[in-house]
Length: 363
Image (cartoon, rainbow, N blue to C red; front, side, top):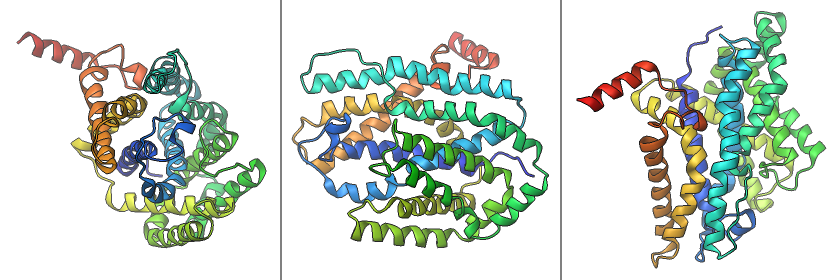
């Protein structure tokens, strides 16, 4: 079983976080923005909801799949104590720090924009995703280590045979449909801090690990049949949009969600599995940018929404401000201040790097 680094998965994680930022920026221009705690523009761009609703059905489950795949790679050279320790540093610590120090900032900006009394309100906010992932690691790691020991067993070989069939990857959707039927969420895409989001994420996290355990068979299947998955997803999206005003029955949305995801995996595996300096930089920056982006987004809306420019230009300006602001804070502060790095999920600087920086500063 090959365990070389998968650059396509790194690329897809970076792209997914970039799409997440754009999604959150687009919410500013939707009529329901303030109901979920976003600053809202007086001039709306409801046409943005068309691509948003297509993205919304798979963006969060996709990240949970990728996170489960990450654990598969992490346990190659770690025992369960090392895994929990490493994930506590990389996930739990940024979650707790963000809960107390990052997410309250954008709530303060929301209060200030709407002339509300300013108050400190620690909460998970957009970092709920990190709390879920750490919980999944704790709950599933005993099973994952047991599965790792049986990597050459008959059942794993049987799993690989199932994954050779284009319906093999889609077969896991049965469990997602069961979750929908049992939990009965009001909206499929209501992931944040809901039981639906927790259990759907748990399933995606688990099957992300399972797909990696099955070896290259899964990846060759989604590569070969990627356009079939795309066609199925596109048809289901068309049905959802035309017949159900974007909120179809949950079982249809579960199939659509996984179909989009397998198309994305197949496309990434085909074209993106190669290293590069840009990927190395973005892969490290993505996590801090994700943690910071809501604060920077709210700051951008406060500055740009009061201007007289058209809404579409405001959307572009807020997008540019958010991306540029996040990367500037990452590059000038988070990346370079040693005690901040672990709080944003970055590894501590190597001693060689610190010495090199000190030498350059003295020259």
